[in-house]
Image (tube, rainbow, N blue to C red; front, side, top):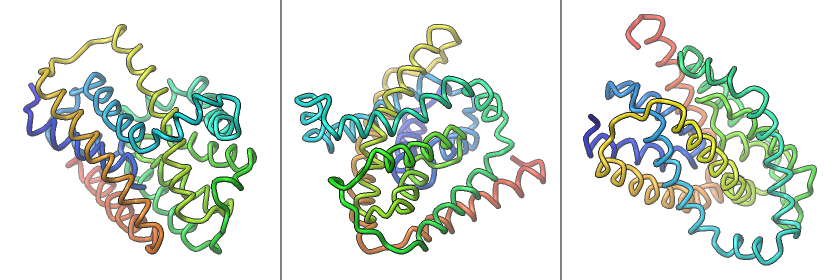
Length: 260
């Protein structure tokens, strides 16, 4: 059975990597594998995602209040439009991508792809669009990139931030909208995972471990969002590109060697 320390570490991994552009699902896959917890499973993943959802709900509480008060306002519609591509891809292709992700054979290459997108996006001419200038076309474009993150080691935050930069959003706004768009994405994932819990095997994880992992995920997720918004004001995405390249090449080498 998973220990509280292992749950705490996995919670940290989920919280940080959900919002840093380096792929939370890919890192959780590696973390579970290293701990020998490949079957730690869906219930734990669901609770860890609930933790990161709580983090963004707290940070974006004012925006959410605005959405509740004006459900057909521009902000609400931007999130709807931005979420549509992921819903379509998830509905029609989720089984295919799930079968691919279970083997982990493409994880290294997905990290490399994430790094490539981050490197290219960081080199585009800086834009100046703020939240009030984002169009529905921008939201759809960014949402299309989010849909590609159905692959486990393709970073949702990385691709959506990159897409925002491609659409000439300023760097802080690109991250801001990316994290805001994560709310329906994470919530939708939790709903799907919860449904699967009733049709599959529920692994043995203690309540204490679940609570520790969820709290760690929420706290470090909150830290990651705040830190990333400030980081992008003055720093480059290329450091994350280099990191996932190193990680991706390492995974590929270990897999070829039969070690991983």
